Image (cartoon, rainbow, N blue to C red; front, side, top):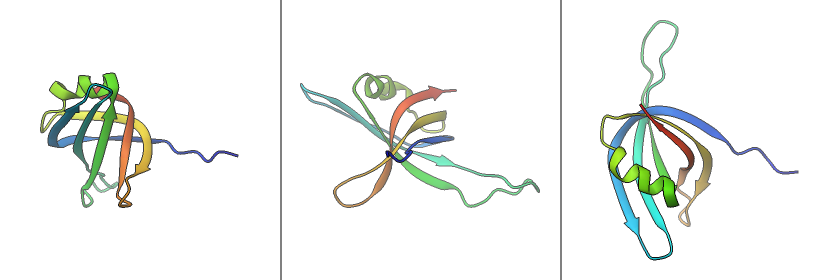
Amino acid sequence: MNNLNSILIEGIVSEGANFIEHKDFCLCQFSITSKRYGDDGKAYKPTRVAIEAHRKLAIACKDKAIVNTSIRIVGRLENDSSGKIYVLAEHIEFR
């Protein structure tokens, strides 16, 4: 049985895009900050999340992932060789 690995996160782009293009692939990395509010209207500590996009999605993020842009991401959790967890984007909406 496969385990479910899916995430939906909304936030603000907090670190601009780092775009890497090679002949075989494209990669775009950036960070977002997501704030959660309680019933009383108070904000909890913001969460900063690393985002990675590949191929055509990376090309789209190259010019649109600008600091302070509102964003919604659907993707899955991944980890790199050092164990750092990030979101591998499968769908992105810029608002």
